[in-house]
Amino acid sequence: MDDRIRDLIFQAIDETMSPEDFERLQDALEHDAEVRDAYLKAVGLCESLGEIATESQMPDSDSWSTGFSLSSRASQPEGWTTTGQAKAWTPAPARQFAVAATVLIIVNGFAFWAGRSHKPSEAKPIAITEQSQDGANKSRIAGHATLRRAVGLTWPDDARRHLEGNVLPNGLLAFDTGLAEIDFFCGATLIVEGPAQLEIESDWSVRVKRGRLRSSVPPAARGFSMKAADSEIIDLGTEFAVEVDSGNARVEVIDGEVELRGGMHDGRHLLTGEGELLAGSPATTDLAGGLSTFSELSLQRREADEKLLAR
Image (cartoon, rainbow, N blue to C red; front, side, top):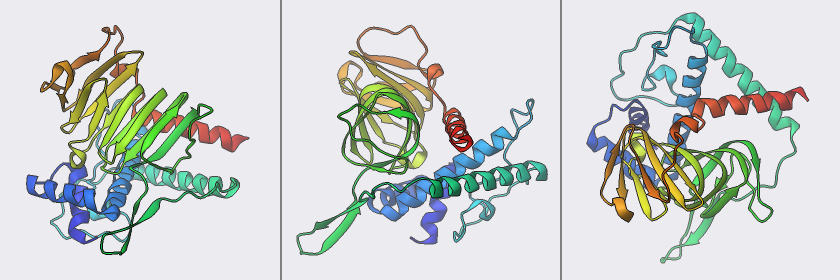
């Protein structure tokens, strides 16, 4: 993967890329597993640093900024270089940076301890080999997403169980209780609240049979599709929520825009704060307000780790 693609990844996260560069990165994400892996790592780094920075804020500093751009060399993982022109940035207070660095050291230390203290699970293949028409063997990832984080998951007796970090293949993902954070290879991320049943169709598509979900889709993953009832929700760069249960289905846009295709709302666009009933009876409860945010899931996961460590 060349340095230009690495630059495009961080420009996508910063939302500073041109339409032409967006198309180039989108094509790379669709066809190159290495680019998808690098993109997911970069998004994860951005979220982790954002969460740490948020937790270190003073109570009256809602407008405080982390003070740096991920397009700068200082925020890139080791071994990554920037060939484009660097963006100007304002240093954050040294004390806040020290707090973030300390938390990262603690988290990494615990991750090392957890890895050493648990028995290794049976390895599952993350790639499969296929033979092309010319007889050459080619490998591709055996799945479309990864289970990034899980809190309190319980599984039906007949369901396939997954651990954090597992690649999720085509087919049904079902669990009874708990929260799961799922990273699709296109870059879209879902928080799924049980009981849930999802049909994973591709890097860019999932069908919701049951569950409550929050979807966050960065610019590079624009076009991600979520199917519910007889409608298809096409993301146009946004964050939205979906709930499907007992014949009822609804969608609500938290930020941005989605397009509805199929069903009785075919062609309709929903903007920030707007929602639509896709099937069944109208609900009286707020959908987005009752769903866990990404920072709340991170906090719950950390609390679960601390309880495990205290045993």
